[in-house]
Length: 135
Image 1 (tube, helix red, strand yellow):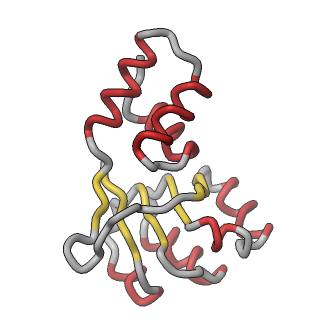
Image 2: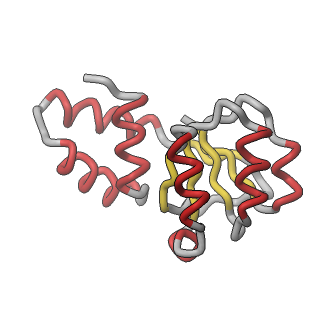
């Protein structure tokens, strides 16, 4: 699973229309979010750093909810955009989620443990759990 890292508003309009998960490394305006949704009609998740989440307007939150797009707080730790425009979630994360599901662990336990070990936000772990690692 890959997260497309976008570091500027100009970059939004150059994205592949098939992107499903995007991390915005800048403080997006309403116009930026609308542009992103328009450019990437298949988008499922927009991830923002914690400091930017507080500045997202209620109208954008409602718009994303109506479009069934998750807005998740989180970071891409240790990622260097100059080397690769994608942050790849290690396959070990999905394997760990699958293992814990087979062991019968609760969703909350899986989110807590995997997010602590992988430095992924619990919201992103929940998304991966529902998307990539069905039991």
